[in-house]
Amino acid sequence: MAAETPSTQDSLGRGRAPWRRVAGVLCLGVGVGLALLTYLRGRPVEVTLEYEFSGERLRGAPELVVAIRSESDGAFVSESVFRCPADGACPASLRHPLRLPRGAYRVSASARSPEGDLYWERVVRVEGEGTLHVSFDKR
Image (tube, rainbow, N blue to C red):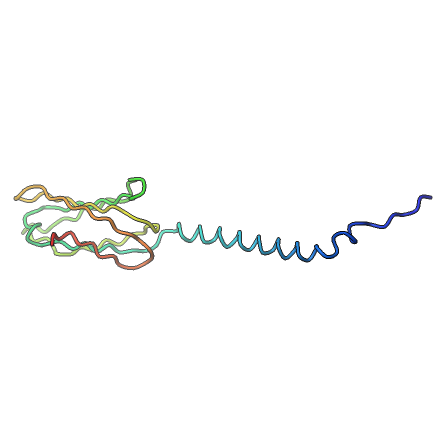
């Protein structure tokens, strides 16, 4: 019978095995943490856009159209039509609750009034949940 040779795995890996396990667990933890952070950053958040207008400029406009596009690639996100009362007295502010991923957005508003077509455009940045005030007044 041949003599058994002692296993070299224990003698070579004895000092490094715990270190490799710790390093592996740390790498796995960092990877899971980064994946979770990426997922949570891309998740849409509840946000309310509050549009503020000069009531005088909107007088007589039957409706106001607000469109939202992604600032990074121009992709269409949302469009809302706000109807003004028949007496032509549009409110000075309108609230628009929606869910948006964090990032920058181009918000444009347009209306047809007796004085002509009106158009405004603003860039807003969504960082988290809450209310963002978007002023379309020219000051």
